[in-house]
Image (cartoon, rainbow, N blue to C red; front, side):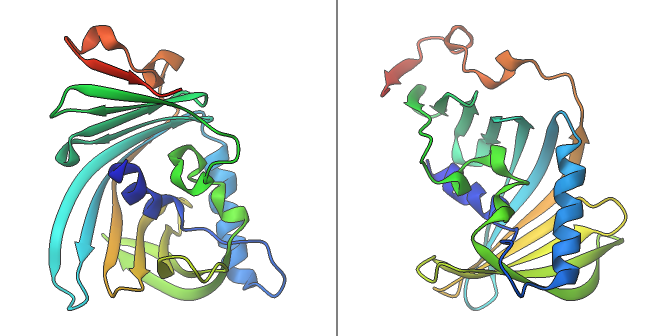
Length: 216
């Protein structure tokens, strides 16, 4: 489930609604959430970059994710993994070994690890502050720093860049306690595509000789 843990960086970039929060940051985050909730489906192509504590880039991978309600489909080709979830069950397909592990979604599991919660997870667990504006890929972005209220988290801060004109995510950078930093950059985003419910289910017939491990 390494790909899911890495992708959690992308979905841990919104803040909690505690008192004494930065009102400017809250306004931006609320607009981001409202805009995202208006889409029936969302598809995102992204790149994921790891920088070590010296600031040098050590690894960059690319992937994509599709979201529809509580369902998602995550594709991480460099890691040899594709994850399907229809909100009830999750299928983690490993390319190299041609096997799929099936697990049941638990109501009390960590929502931060579920890409389907991409634009709603911000409603709890963070304090936030507005930093300013910065140009990202020729687009004006509003920058927000997010700080976990749970100090046992492995990261100290997430810096979020929101497209000022479209209220869409452009980039998120997570700063870990070990000195490493992880950056997720949005390369392409499509909304309201015709994605059927079957798109979010693993079809063993399409993977010849796949080994199925049902852990439910």
